[in-house]
Image 1 (cartoon, helix red, strand yellow):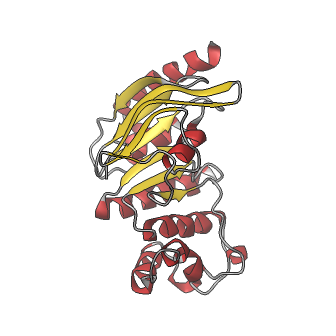
Image 2 (image 1 turned 180 degrees about the horizontal axis):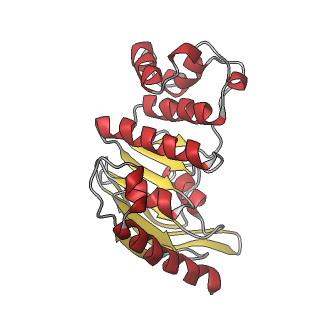
Length: 246
């Protein structure tokens, strides 16, 4: 599934948020978006998901314009948003349940890979933050759409849990290589996960820079210790610093 965004504009009343924004996610590609707080990153995902309609410009999936159309992507928000009265298994099949008969065998396979087999009959209040994030991600995968939009899914986790979740996400993604559009505030996270990185300007946001990540896959945390990683991190930091300073 490929995503192409062309000359996208969005304002809320007199407040312009996105300004002639252009980006692309190729089939099987992992693309990250970095930008200052309030630059419209979450608004962009809401536009892709059809929750909002752009003022101008186009959003296309595989060449078909989907402006304002819902139900065509998988979405994972910052908050896991699990239903407290449903078990882990019932939560992960929820998105699929809304469209078709859930595949419980596949759900249990993914729960096993996530180390959650013994918790499938547990409720959200019995889970840690990292476990809740894994449940939310499996729910997004099981919706069976080929484009995943992830909105800072690991931002609330501590550093060690976040790295563990990043590695787990990559291990799951590398099995079927769904196209991913991933929003983050962390330069390190973007470099560790993505094939390409778009850097947004401050609001009204446009694409300030596009970075091709040169690191081979699979990746592990030893990458953080390399000179190449540090140099690219510093380059991106300078782009971000310019936006905050202006």
